[in-house]
Length: 483
Image 1 (tube, rainbow, N blue to C red):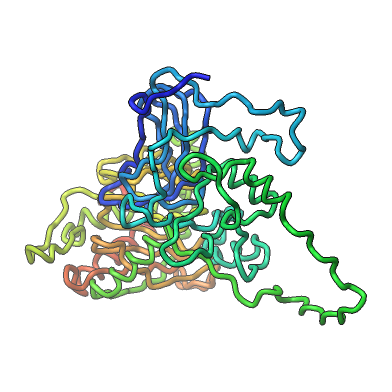
Image 2 (cartoon, rainbow, N blue to C red; image 1 turned 45 degrees about the horizontal axis):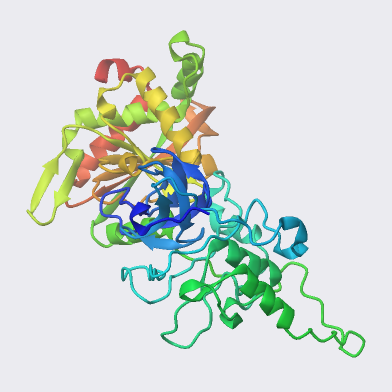
């Protein structure tokens, strides 16, 4: 076996993939110890407070160690993977042929063979928020089934239904050990932790024999061999348990960690609601002509292959209204005590994703033609649904549209995206009785709600913007004359 020197090992640290981010959760590893990697190869996916991001490795080599398992939240700047760039092999020679090992000890594809750690490296787990220290790493539960993009308003209920009932305590291999205060978390590599989990072994009860106090596979098997046999359950003498109610889980509560996108959204919404004085105005609009125009555009060759829907024309109507009322496109600079009027529009579109609500924006949307705007909307929605929205795509927004109508909701009072002056909520478009040309007829009708920061936008300006949007949707030909 090739001996690796400490000098040949490069530590890849968790980067700051967005402005001011301090931590990220490791969602998935794409490599394992012993794998060869090349410069630019994606080695893992992490979730920040803004989005899920794939991380490429910046050099060639062989993976020596994954410092943290999936589901761990790690501080920015903390080493997460070690790569031998000196040409050595990270995979040790097997101590025993696989055919001679007990069935439970044979490594699987999901759990590569353990590799020894360099003596004297003394690497300790990292306590999130306090840098490299001798304290234990904070573990978070792994993700359950993804929440569908649809029904974002019931995302929590969907997530609950997708999980098994919560147990009183997490399995020993997943939960931090109940060690005395100040004790280190048991040191073991991800494959060993998985083996312990599969065999039901509490790592805090295992006596380590590896270098630097690391628990090895043999230590786990030894713990299994010496564990006392579990007593037979006294089924015959135990009284029959009362059946659980058919409509409830046996666990009365399930606790879900607030993290990632949901954590960032919650903090932003609280900050916005208690910083900017919100005012919301409503208008009900006959959008029958807009719906007819949508159908015409779908058949237009210029829009072939593009996403054409009512949101496209609503977005264009809002851009035209901002052009006619530019003071609404502004932000409040508290430190300088200034109103900053933006001469560009980065149009945010609220998107429900499996990881929560995000608001990516279309940069310089005011410069785009209708086909270009349709193309940008399509790319934005597809990227958000795939969970690939970059942090930069969610920065620098000026105004936002949130389409609550896709969930059958008539209207709402949207909360401003932090740093923005206005947000337009679009309700469901439904056939309703409407007075048209002096007669009551069934028409396609929706309700628009515009929330704005009353420090920047007074009632007159907010009313003009909302009235312009409504007028364009009632008579979409105004797009030609007003744009």
